[in-house]
Image (cartoon, rainbow, N blue to C red):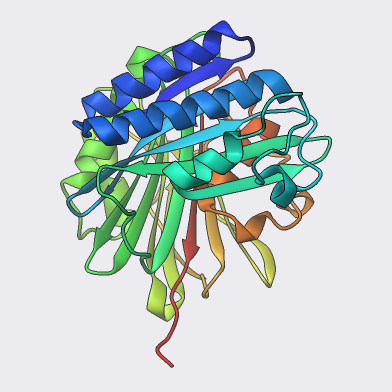
Length: 335
């Protein structure tokens, strides 16, 4: 369950607020958290109208054990912020307004994160939780964005992350084509994979191949990571791109040709390294193959959802569904 709202002109600020309230109610979040979400989304959307262009607000559910929350991301192609720290101060304004927006968001939301490049735009992310505080940090951090092709409401892409006794399994699926039929395929793949939490990546793909035989088919990739070992296993079929990104640079992971549910020559998994602070990035072919992460100076310090949203903004083809999922190894050995 995800929501996407374009914010290009003032009337869409109210729409973003309404969508945020409806989203929180679907998750059965309490009235106080819903009010805080509505206020923070209104501030973010207002800033998009005042300062930016090609604005978009993305909402996604967050769960950590019994805790329930909402992730909100505002992304734009505006002029960007020359100094994020200055923009966070109450009273700072470049549009003649009182300038309380970002400061107030930091007080009512959790984990506010802003990445801005002058001349390129801004990505702003925050969390609103049903509980008073966000859950504690885990051994990995992750995030992603998943949007339908322009003009569609159903997305034929999907992604999921499953924790099984400390082993993290990331799955990205692209149903063939786009629209409602592709969405059904992608959601079926997520469901089938979820029924087999202990399966390794190649075995997951084999299950999906059998389960999708009477559908239009899909591309998919699965990675299983054990954070404390700094190692992972990857398997992919079709046009899902995956790569690791860390101090040693970018290393691509190999997917085999084929379409799950139709024709696959072989299922083969590869080992890869993912040391602490390194990231795994996986995306569907709605994202341009020309993606080069080296231009995002300093973004590796930000939340994975911020990284995913920046990639989406800059490399989304627009004529297909698009998904970007990012996982970072946050493991810290005991001193």
